Length: 251
Ligand SMILES: [Zn+2]
Ligand SMILES: [Zn+2]
Image (cartoon, rainbow, N blue to C red; front, side, top):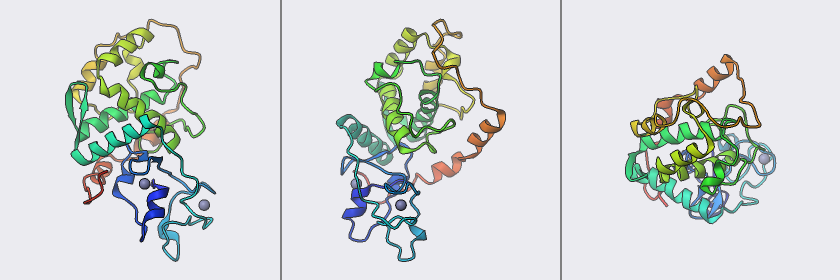
């Protein structure tokens, strides 16, 4: 559960926005600050139903103000938040020269997210897309997915995924060629199906890597850990939470 500290502060009667549930959103376009996924004082998740007096502005654990210490977004981050809002509102977005449906865009971002947050991403690849490298690792968990990763990871990875899709597939293929990225290094075990325009670009990558190995060897997770990553989010449940757009929600 994410929230905008300023929106809560400004509300006469604080309420939680449907768009804060959207996994591709990590900021508030109106206030230009990052969303939060926990209390800034004690890091407890947002659980407004636990407060006996129902005040959504206060942490249910430490009772302190959730609106403290807002974290400003950079201008490029705000741009991505606006693009995510537009996708949420319009149900489609530009991918290269085409327009992708809401579902296809999410599936593609989900696949890219699992790749860019993994050790299979070559060092320096992100810099090609004006994304700082390496990823800030403080909030990183080994089996993060788009839906389960914390805000610090998503705030880095989502602008990266949007940058990849903006010129899809040209700049992606060019950078892959430069860094010797093979098909097997983009594919992963958590694949959940992807649109044909995504898979056809991946199919143009060479089968085998031809470049140097990265300094960090790939993680070797057990089958059990993969299973739990699979089971954490049901896709049907996920999409069913996203269909409803309340009036006045788009920014
Ligand atoms: Zn806000
Ligand atoms: Zn707290």
